[in-house]
Amino acid sequence: MPAPVRSAAAILVLAACGAVATAQDRPGDLRSDPAWVRSRYGGWGGPGVQPEAGPMDGVAVKDYAPQPSLVLPETTIERARFPVIDVHAHVLADTPDEVADWVRTMDAVGVETTVILTRAVGADFDRLAELYLRSHPGRFILFCGLDVRDIDAADYPRRAVDELVRCHAIGARGVGELTDKGVGLTRDSGLAPEQRLHPDDPRLATFWDKCGELRMPVNIHVADHPSAWKPLDVYQERTPDFQGFNLHGKNVASWDDLITRRDRMLARHRGTVFIACHLGNQGHDLAALDAALEAHPNLYVDISARDYEIGRTPRSSARFLARRRDRVLFGTDMTREAGMYRAWWRLLESADEYMPGRVLWRYYGLDLPDAVLESLYRGTAVRILGLASDGRPAATRRLEQAPDTP
Ligand SMILES: [Zn+2]
Image (cartoon, rainbow, N blue to C red; front, side):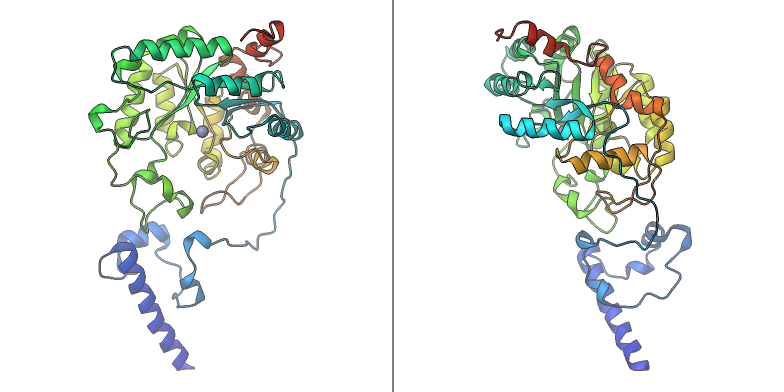
């Protein structure tokens, strides 16, 4: 019997050395590093048993998919409790058949209207307006993009505004998703820091003001999940599925700098509604997000793609959503599969525990009360999108009245 124990111990040492060499690039055993022990085990100080080597030492984090032995109820919610306005989707259907298929899924799961954040201008936007707005009145709302060509030219601010006005005339009812993850809204990583077009750039001032004048909310993605600025090592918070989004060590603005620029833009353009998507990338710090909402009355947030933030903090998230119910919008930002929508309903409406999610940790249902759910799903969106009380977009009504208007 002693022999296997000794060999297991030898393998453990080898495995530990291997992990150190690849993940930390410095000598020593991670298990003797107090910072690692604290991060891994908290006050427990360890697993409480002597870890032994075994087949799991070769299991990669990206492959780990534990099957819990827990016996718990699994709530299936086919349709959302209230008709939903999903304020964060993209061009996930590109033909009339695909659009019709999407509408069938929306009917099945209880989504009344989907906002398509096209990011498009020019002929691209015109084609999408034709594809989405005419065939299914009331089911889609289109946001257009921001023209980012020749941003250094003297006429750039005027051109950007002219294209906005043109898209609005065709049916755009908002702008977005505009994204600055550290290289500016042109998303051109080749630009030097001083050339980048960040949200507080004076070249955008007239554009933001025109959005407000036309009552077009701006969906804006500033920074990203803070873990994207942290190294891809043993302390990385999110799973390897997200490592393609990592920015650590890259020539990008810092997370804090980007949030500061966003807040400067919010303060300068109070007449424009901004929807900072993904909980403003502050879902990890709801107190800070709450302070930002307090400081900027024109700031709204959507919860899209942050299932993994609210799912790991069901109690504080539920309190936040109740307190800021007039400022938070529902959005998905994933596929258009029925199962994806129903996973959201289960997260928001049920009290289920330990649900699988898109990251390493599991989710807990928020069990939201009706009043909070109603404003999250539609009430706040109806208000800021200027929808009629029947929930139908003004853009659709105009199209129906004048079907030949370009
Ligand atoms: Zn998006």
